Image 1 (cartoon, each protein chain N blue to C red):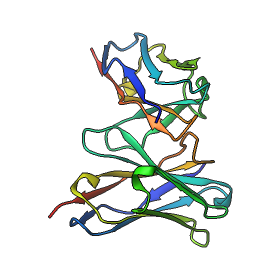
Image 2: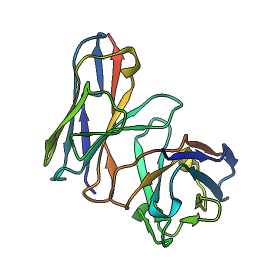
Image 3: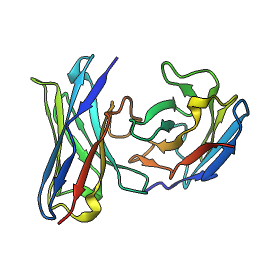
Image 4: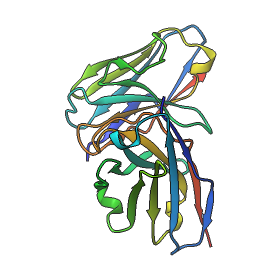
Amino acid sequence: QVQLVQSGAEVKTPGASVKVSCKASGHTFSIYGFSWLRQAPGQGLEWMGWTSSFNANANYAQKFQGRVTMTTDSSTNTVSMELRSLRSDDTAVYYCASSVSAWDFFNPWGQGTLVIVSS
Amino acid sequence: EIVMTQSPATLSVSPGERATLSCRASQSVGGNLAWYQHKPGQAPRLLIYVASTRATGVPARFSGSGSGTEFTLTISSLQSEDFALYYCQQYNNWPTFGQGTKVEIK
């Protein structure tokens, strides 16, 4: 069974960048892809984008294009998401989740990483 | 963007009773619909995909139905561990989620 373990909580100031990592275990890393999603306080779930662990191709939601980069490292079975030019409304719990393609359901999910953006 | 609308926002149910949750899509998503259970402080858990297929390990009291724009998640006999938030998600296009239905103890 695939397990995803994410990095710990982060506190950032506006304008900074944050990088959240997600380590996969229990399956062949390169046959899956990974999506990143987030949930701001009191808000619903929002898909940010997807990256292939096979060829590193990525698809980003239009809202985040130019501000997000998703990468994979097959040597450590880790996928990462960097979000730049942080704003206060980027405060959210960020999740990685396994999905075969960008248009797919998500299973399983990581435990979530709280990112707080505050001056 | 396909907008997903869930109803009701909150459902109060007694243990052992049936719960019926609805999800509507702003345009047809075919059968590309998933349901998740989300408890505070935990990762969301996939329950149903392709509208009606239970994920591995999901109890048979959970069932999904529907196609096109109207979908339903039914929990046949609520157990204490079932009180949680439930989200629907379409993946016929860029993934979008409903706002969730909170199932609470009556």
